[in-house]
Image (cartoon, rainbow, N blue to C red; front, side, top):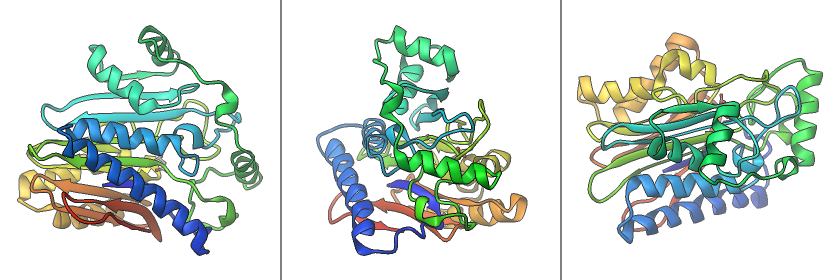
Length: 304
Ligand code: ASP
């Protein structure tokens, strides 16, 4: 399963734009399945899918990341392996094309779970990861979107539900989750965060248990929405706990999780979930969430 952000998505009002999103999601889902058909693990599939989503400028991650209050990109990403809960995360990084790949290196090449900012960038250099120039991220749309958020003196989700200028709210945080034929689960989430966020603000996406979680005994989860809501409710781990402690399946746990998110913090956003049996589920409190799933056989299912 993959997602490309939650929100109003009011900009997607013509078929051409809708098809552009759905086509990207479909292509990436097929690529992820192919990796597992060829013997790759769920972890490899989610890293590859998240990287491709980061490379597509329509999404708020990697090259399409939104801008902070200083007109800078600061990206967060995490990846987790449900086999042994090994995880890697980076926060407030810039000049990296694929933060999810840096997160994977933190997981495999360091003794830590999370590195941030300058320390994460030094680690990227140490691992031989090349830096991309600042203008790799700057699109006229992103600059205009920041300008609008500043005029409103607010921060906003890439696809904000509240009306400022929905025309420009057309990108979203990304996530990928997978179950491979061996029953292994994995999850990855990557984001540019929230438009006009404070410098140094870290959202839920790189926080294990908030924006991302995977445990072979329960499920894999990736979240999107206002990170502060997801951090306070530890939503991804909460959904996993519904499965572990209450014996729910993915569909029931997603519903229970969304209810909890709403009741506790009036959370704005959504989640995608796959349980240990391979049941796929999604839930959101916003008007829409771009997401899709693909199984061993058959076509990809993509929707808003
Ligand atoms: N969850 C992300 C954050 O708060 C934003 C998003 O999902 O669009 O940084």
